Figure 1 (cartoon, rainbow, N blue to C red):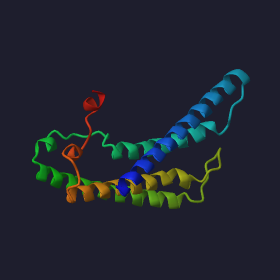
Figure 2 (cartoon, rainbow, N blue to C red):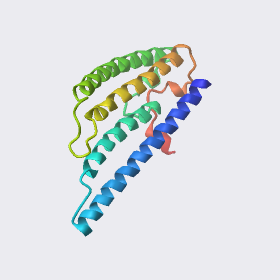
Figure 3 (cartoon, rainbow, N blue to C red):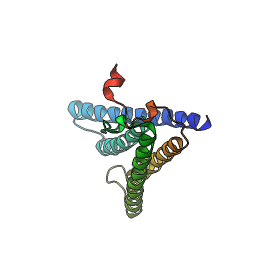
Amino acid sequence: MVMAKITRFLEQLLNIIMAAALAIMVVLVFGNVVLRYFFNSGITWSEEMSRYLFVWLTFLGSIGAYQNKEHLGVDMMVKRLPRHVKRFVLVVSDLLIIFVLVLLLDGSWKMTLMNIDSVTPAVGMPLALVYGTGLVVAVSMAIITINNIYRIIFNKVTDEELNAINDSEEMII
């Protein structure tokens, strides 16, 4: 119950941050276009800031998509398996995901450290903030995955939750 409340709060916070990043991107790009078109000037740092906001938006969106099982996947074989085999396959799949997330965390950590003293040309923002997106994503997805493994092992999932992905056709109807 507590974990569900925390998860719901973090998901709402993530959505607010993504909406704010998108709104700032739109304002910066639109404002820059208007200034260039009508006043022959522009905001020198808007393109760079929009680019970095887009990176953060994309990575944060992947966390939300992963939480809601909306990433691209093929599960036609897994859907046909009995419940106990399906649980085993999903735990193995989640363990492989943890392995990949460890690789992402390691690579992002190294890139963040390499760029800790570098700054972006126009904004002057530390490049470590850009490369830190991988750290945030790896840790967030690892927490989600560990929670999934726990729920599967201790049989706290419904048959519907055992689907590896949510079908987009089912979501439309």
